[in-house]
Image (cartoon, rainbow, N blue to C red; front, side):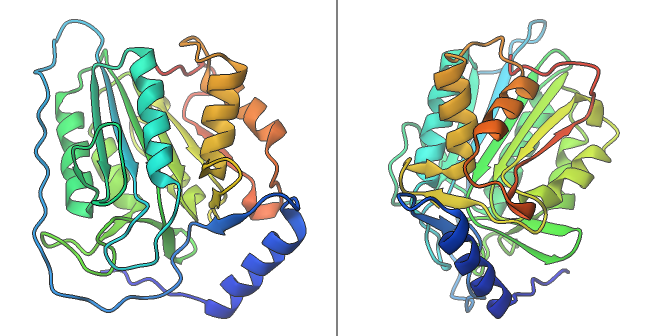
Length: 293
């Protein structure tokens, strides 16, 4: 089992440096990285019930798994991850996605809510989608919340139950665990968008999958970078620039928008570019443009 190491002095220094120097005066933010190793409380069982129509094989189907966790079971909370989830939900609805599953927390408001975003439930949901999406389909997995890492090359998503655990999981959804699920997908396109601290660490694992040529991944930051809650925009900072500022406002939610051109436009206008803070793009097939339908 891997264990997460935390460097308090470094994180405090980095946070104060970036917030104090590189954030515009009118812009307030909070990083999407955990700030302490919580004690382990008593466990409660949480499960997900997926109630979807059976897929219609023979035509292209579109599947979206949306995760947005603002209020965590144990660790410090965030503000706008549920808003991220709602905005992605609206976007996928507008694109005509037939199958959308939303996982979140038990106190925020969601336009659709299917279950708590525990590690177990996230994995179960992704496995369900991978098992039911065929070679004509599109899979999208977007997630907003806390992130962490153990050491260089080992990033993780903090699920809702991080530090407590549910159903024999510990709440740490590792990069290699995500790739182990998605590498089984036969879908023609797999879109991954991670707005968490240390998100870039998922890139190498996703690109090492045997089906990586079907994958496009947008990360909020480099492997050692931070994602941010952006109070000015009521979103995660990278979610705002990529989804609201670019896909919705600039490209008018056009289903023909490629992720490559969206990333380039969002990055060119991103207000927080410095070193490891710069969002990253991982494109499994640079000779083919990627769209979400």
